[in-house]
Length: 483
Image (cartoon, rainbow, N blue to C red; front, side, top):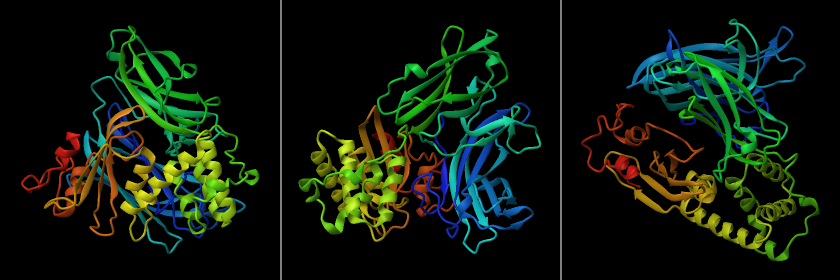
């Protein structure tokens, strides 16, 4: 399973369904997936979703149209290997109704590690461009039985090669959000299996199954088996029914099977499901518990309401934001109590007081001049997963930025998970998450190189210790693998 590669090209965006007004800066989502084509080799697809309400429009025939300057650079060992720069016109928006719009670009890339850099500029706005950079890994898919990444779709329809979204007979509009609210009853997916014609049989099997990420249990009602004729490239397009899937976090898996039911390769996609018609705290009719409320002083209500965000699901975060916007302290109090009544109905006060102590602790340890403790990466991880089993702190290193390595013996069903945080600004206690091997967290295969940029101007993504081997104290890689 390849690591998640999603980026949000914006300063702050709390939930994918939250849209900012027309006066805000450009906001866009970016994701990328790897595929293979005979005669072309391995290639990368880069997807963009532009938030329609965040761009400026000008008059065009039949309505309004935006224009975005797109710059893409792909580097290997600090050398430019691919690039593209162009102007992208949005679809014409009619009657002042603006919608998100999409773009896809493809680059043929040999196997290896690369740095992908994106810059987007709204040409009708005076705002500065937004930028993002990410390390990506291209695997060799040509020789062995393998699978592409799973591409999820907003929708697909029969098309032709005149569309940039065309693939395997369909125009496919990518979906970049991993959150599926109750109004969505299915997940359209597309992926490809390669070199199944190397099998001794003319048919192969495919198992589609969903696993509860928190418990590790396979949901048998959602397991589907199918048979397929083997081929050099076997395209698979499915519409996965999640109409009866309850609220939770899940992993959609596809496993290729031989005729003897041997697992050959598996590809996975992690998503979050909310199947409540409306997540409601019934705060209006809630009777405030005096004992509960005495634990929240008048001047800290907003602080503790916002502190629930690290342990909330996207739909819950949306409700929190709506309550914050009311600026009504009593409603905010009711929301906090309702949250804990729903989260821990039998031990509401105990659960809340325990969490309150954790929030106060991360505020003391991890807050800085511009962030509350729960807003920082370390604070969010602590509140979401609890206290780490061990922490390695390196505040001084001749070759690396200050960093911390957190190791957890157990997180739910997962064992021995690690997080590395670093402070590239060297001030303000502003540690950021650099890399983690936990499912759903930031994956950065080139993290040792990034950590060593403090005095290493030139590096090598394939060898993170290049130009850094003789620096005394540069042992973060060894410490990370030790735990």
